[in-house]
Image 1 (cartoon, rainbow, N blue to C red):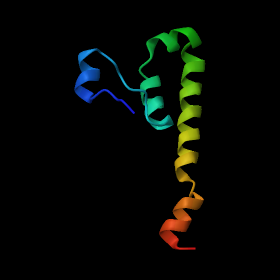
Image 2 (image 1 turned 180 degrees about the vertical axis):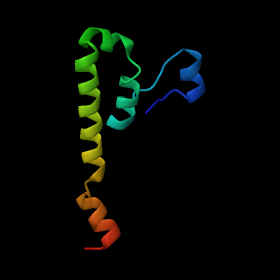
Image 3 (image 1 turned 90 degrees about the vertical axis):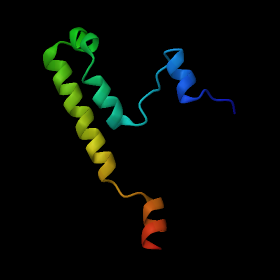
Image 4 (image 1 turned 30 degrees about the vertical axis):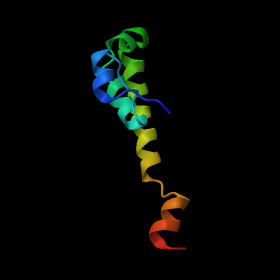
Amino acid sequence: MWQLSDEERAAIGLETLPANLGEAVLELEKSETLKAALGDHIFHHFVEAKKAEWGEYVAQVSQWEIDNYIGY
């Protein structure tokens, strides 16, 4: 598969998407556009809900981790 290098993407101003919800929430917090659209109250609660969702997700132990790290 053909891919642009980091340098090629930077040269044309192409940014990558966040790799996971945690990174996406960090970007979301910077969005003045979404904050203006939702209003401060809803925006704050939405960001906090997504942080909680990410926290719950990363706290889970997957079957892959059990199989590969515990050896069952």
